[in-house]
Length: 459
Ligand code: ARG
Image (cartoon, rainbow, N blue to C red; front, side, top):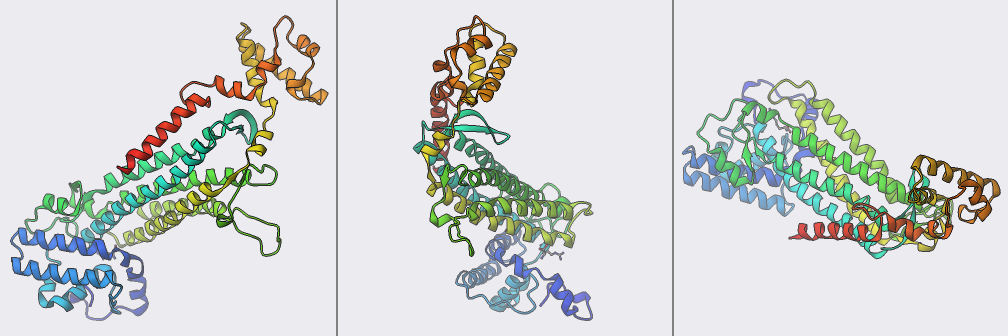
């Protein structure tokens, strides 16, 4: 059975049928498709198009189809072109000729757009939960290692000391924006296209607002042509997924570097690492490398769908059938990637000694310059003095903090230099007490803010 055979004298070429079919991809829409059809039956009854008895027959038939899918007992027929065809075909087998009334006033164009939005709205809520788990893995580590000072990097060169917790939280906040973005995407996806028909609007007096409420949509689409064509929600999700992937790839890359023997800051637990088939000693951060790599795949999915959407004339075009593969792939990728990265983060061992040992007083040159500023010298000058001190220390082969007193006297005549006060990592961090800074009290406030966000989300 096809849903459109009447006008055609001959059957579809077998390869063309295979090319046309989307069942392999869209069968996972079975649940939302059936729920959409139940709501549509009720809307038809409310509009006086179906009798109550017909609506009853359709709904109980649809429940039975639902139960078959739910139990994994549903059997697809060779002619099932897509999930919509399969559900309607089975409904008619169960309910008899009344099954043929389900599609009254509806098109697969508004049906698939409705199904897909509904699926995405629920998928987004699920991903938000997955994200929260990763955020809490980062936050737990940040709370557990509060007080630990690490070298902060820019250009991957030691820059200034920061709290390890501060660094961890620098990866919490991008994920918080991602979580927000997923919620906003869901909010915009909650526009009901059903009732748009093929493109012109259904020919029956359907109460679309009531239909929207029934299905959990926030509003109805204001234009039926746009209603069947709009895939902004899919593109927005793919963007949100690609950016989330990008954020994950950044935290992954940092941890991959930190896990190298050269850094040795962290070690992945055996549960989230892999070995080499040739080199017995290897412990590779494969999960993080996969996260980094899959970020590229996610970006490709966004670029692919945008290219598909670009230049489509108005209303439905079959090109749009390509939307689901991209969205499902992005969802499936994140659905596994988020908990795996969360597991990697929550089980990694942090070597506090190695992290402390990586601190060097060269990264306090800024503190030296700022110390002199407090004695009234313009920063441009103190920057020069501190820079020359660094060069002198390098020439002498000593630590910046170990420059002899006569060197200081020559570098900054008449100024009071007290290396002990300047060259203290704890004091350096402690001075950055501005909100958002790395001082313990500022990070404490940040930790509390992050914790409150995670708690409020659970309610
Ligand atoms: N399988 C189709 C899709 O996913 C359903 C809509 C078909 N509409 C049509 N006019 N052929 O887009």
